[in-house]
Image (cartoon, rainbow, N blue to C red; front, side, top):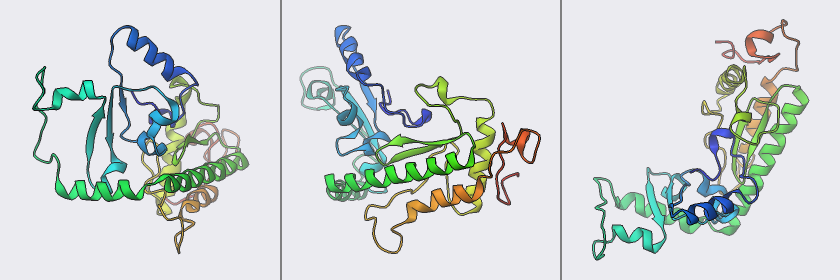
Length: 252
């Protein structure tokens, strides 16, 4: 399971949910596997350190590779023992053409050494500021939308109501609104995934000539979201519940 579900906006789990999940799975002898390929970067100890859950296995990637393609699995000793060639119990052969690639391992080690607690604190501060500024933009525009997430992770959701679960993250017209907004941002030179996750949103240093690069996203959203217009006016019904977007490619 994903402890910080990105498809519903990186909404943190309800307090006690992961602890309860762990109690139930232990009672029935079920392994808990966390997908932290994305969520590991939410903090120095990942999502499991932030929200609990005590998984038996964890899938990791992205941030641990220093920019190179990477994937890894970690877990408790008694579970990972099946991968040990010297184990006397059941064994699983694990390997592949690109396993333990020395370039990726070197880059990953350098990244892990650089990502100390102070770095994560700076990233978290940057993420909080970006979400705050984006939410101010959405509020000013009167359009249904919000920036959700935790730590340095955030996502643009073109839904106005508070998100608590997967059902809340689906709404008629939201996909059309998202497409128009993301095309307008692309016109501005800002790459956003079709699921609302900005690409290359943060830098480690937060200093130098690009120190306000995260601020470019709120500014561009502000420049491209028009104030609310009643359905039937410019961009109303087509944009989805009164949305209007500025940008040459927005209506494409």
